[in-house]
Image 1: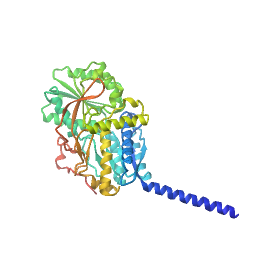
Image 2: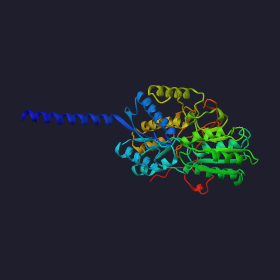
Image 3: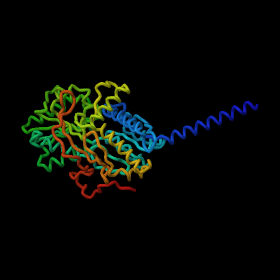
Image 4: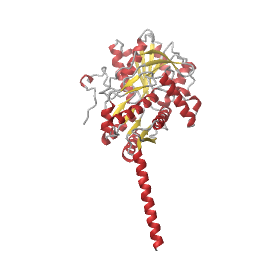
Length: 420
């Protein structure tokens, strides 16, 4: 009997010591959520952001972590399913108790998770260009607002260097980002004297693959006399059949240039880019930029890909949302160390004015009031190797305008999130 009691006591003691050990481990780490589609139509774009986040977390951990604690990534796959984004974000905040979440690509996924972050007072870093018309206390936007991408791109197309376009095709995936961006662009074009008859607007669903009819319509529209350009807000894996059909139809950049806002180096990996030479993309970073910070960033990611045996590791590329992810994680680290806490409200207060020497070659700053980064703008031409040759850029980083001046009623909106 005494042996049995001794065994039970030893078992209870071992369990207690184990739980103390687990608690100590938890206290020594800071959990970080990664919320990106690793399957479904958006995996083509979002998987690389998950890898970038893991790489950045490893880099920070190697240099001592955050406040002496290691970052512990918690990766979930919302699978390009917008309601599932909300479920996964609730899991990260309520069950996994993460201090911050880095994630989402599409605006519909971001809109899906916003109520959860507001309810639970979570913190989201959103790394992709978007339509603006939003400013939330619980979100920091490290991608571009329309005045940091869409407006400069269309201004370029209308300029002498950009071909002096007089007609525009606004072509996008059918959801909030393309529709709102095109609403802004329509108002902007109207302010520049472009008539409604000279604007064609078309949308396709997520995962759309047959672009033959739409390309034929574009050719017809472009053949009606005035110089025509296409502004593409197609998202996800639909870009592959769109660009393939563009090449098949022989629509060259010299005839009808396409400028894309959601196509970068990663999306072009699956496409024969030789017929696409000269078509454009507008971003705040390109892999081809020559500067020491970018050389370090590109090498780090290539080394990461080989070490972690990523698919086609020898041909991996970096792109704009990857840079925005990298910058966002480092700025969050800096804010936590300034606040001496991972408390969401304290970190939010410490984020304004944070700066970081980014792979774009510029020191980027988080605006003191509007939760957006000041960012440079680059317009690049597609090269035969799937990289971009920069043909235009701003003199330096420009301040984001979350509320577009081209949307009626925005004059009265505050340029700072409402804190309740």
